[in-house]
Image (cartoon, rainbow, N blue to C red; front, side, top):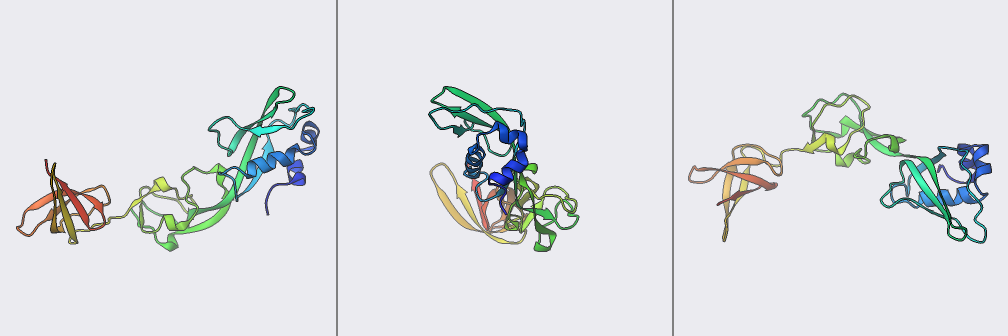
Length: 225
């Protein structure tokens, strides 16, 4: 069920808000919020912060609805109502509550644990009350490592996760040596594990051990000065 329409907004804003807003203005505000990229497709409630604000009549014209440049229609938001014909503008503060699915820990998860499907679940709740990095789909957490412990029911955020090792000790890897005017490649065996961007040690056929950066799974780059 979507939280929009005249009757829902009237219920949320109260009878004094109905008196303050023109009969169709609440519908236009709802359409404007609904069309925002951050809200589009989600359920929301638009709560008028100050129901005593009165919007003047826009004689001979239509009221334009907008926001300040770069403003996000999410949480505490100020909408700008403008009547070009009459030359007035009113700032109306709203609390935009947005609802949808997000990922939480299904049990206590210690730091360093690799996320498995049974470790997390999806629930429905108020997204606008959560950190911006909260995961909306469990796929974004699978096979990643927790950077901090999470209590059961805690939201899982992108910043709570890091990539699992894409190279493990003993894995065969392609070693790329890059210099100023050359690039050659060969084979080696990883001596240490690492994620993308980590430095790992690789033993080559003659027994020499080189250190390079993990470029992607199974590929290590050694920069030669």
